[in-house]
Image 1: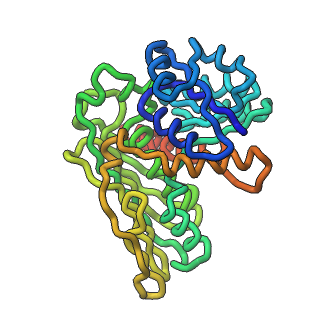
Image 2: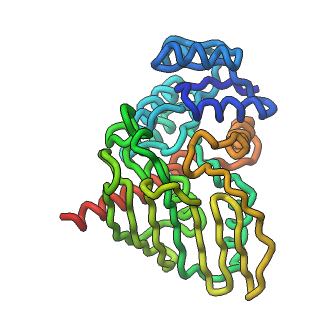
Length: 332
């Protein structure tokens, strides 16, 4: 049995709590938050105990794993504290807001008995698993072209009086916060980007980070691609990933396989019913989180399960950071 604590009792903490409760061999036992009332309410809702700070939760010998569900800019500091306590840590996306902080977390894990898992739950969806296998098996041939489109919407009120939209706590906007899952899926299926050119803008919101970005990429395997992301187009539209090879193509809308062509023949895809998740984080469900956390628990039990560890979680942050750098160079 692995016992869990949650630090940060906002919306995404509910997803973690429900995911943990659905896993055999996992138990949610406690929570903490910098706002005591939030922790107390969360604890009452889930009938668990709460602690008045992170250190008191880490001192509890019953806690094995801590889920970090706090603002982006705090992930590294909190995760490192958890690892120093020799406990395992699950970090919400993004792993951190810079690769420097990602590297500090990875180094802390090397010195700890604890391990890191980074939430990249969309990798667990059936369609993404299928798409990854098709690509790795060479069924669509050599990848030539790919695209990622994330035309999202966030209102001005979403950013008002919040850590959202700030460089210090959000790290970025349409890419680092709202779009990192799409970037992660693209690099997971196509590979590491070798060259990046980008335009990064703030066009419609009064925020410090970007609400529009376009970039061109050349991947290490020779493929070329584009990423476009925004949080300023009302009412917001679905994330789409398209990957074209010499022998076919794969289209993903959100995390559903919309079109698959191999050897000129169209294969069965999935009926897509939009749920609006891309434009309302509160609609995220626990299913994929549960799949990912279950793999981590089984791996900690010694079973042969891989999971998104620190170096793997760093990859999406690295691409986005490079997009930002390229955008600054172009403005200079």
